[in-house]
Image (cartoon, rainbow, N blue to C red; front, top):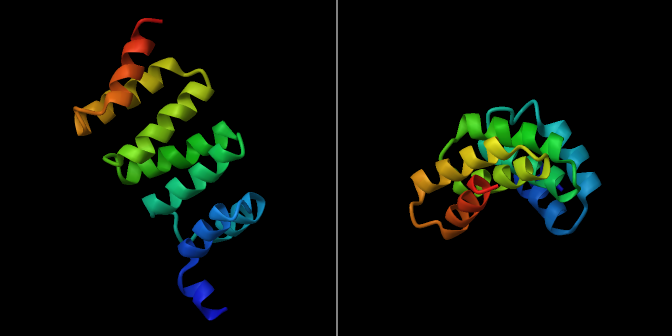
Length: 119
């Protein structure tokens, strides 16, 4: 039990892996003050909210993660999906362009960008 408190992000990831999303959200909310400047933590929390279909809450966490680490392609990919879920086309296009700058050969972002620009 002591290890749980030494590795709280690991426990949070385990809750997500086990599909315990409600517990993960509650646990994460308790950790948030301590991890408010941790881009990985913000990414995990955003991912949990995305899984439970709360795109608005997910976006707030992905925005914070982005502020802390703008070069995380995985986070940018999920952030793009959240913008799409919220029907925020311009923001999704911006995310795709950022991904393409970081990974010019990212075919998923390139394909999505083409689709969005042709809508």
